[in-house]
Length: 146
Image 1 (cartoon, rainbow, N blue to C red):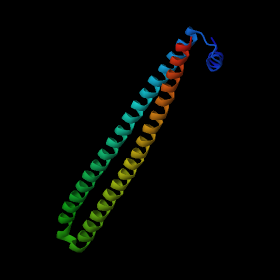
Image 2 (cartoon, rainbow, N blue to C red):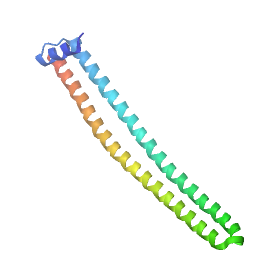
Image 3 (cartoon, rainbow, N blue to C red):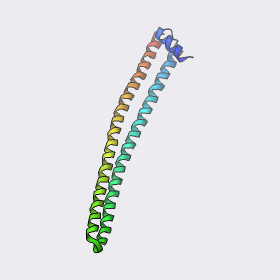
Image 4 (tube, rainbow, N blue to C red):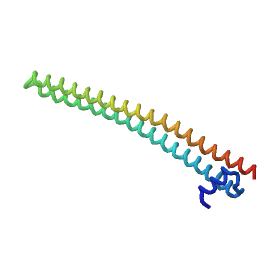
């Protein structure tokens, strides 16, 4: 059966019980698919947020390790050239801190985008579920008229 013809018959009040059942089933499938899509989107957003947080922590740890390693190297070098080693350690420490801050900012921005995405997906889910419910209600009304 042609879905457009079924919908037209429904609007005109000429739909059969079988067509009403088909419309109700299609509405239910749409609602279920929409919910599954929303659930998958929420899981993706949470996974992305967790990845961003892990990236920030890993980068922070790497930066700290880099700073410590460079500082140790600078201490060994300081025996022969104290002034150069001190500048190297300070520059590396500053670079490591800047890298950590930049990564943290990037992770925060990613988290903000994920929050916005989650909010939009919640509203989309609500809207799509509402449409599905309206279709089910219309089908029930049509079936009760038949």
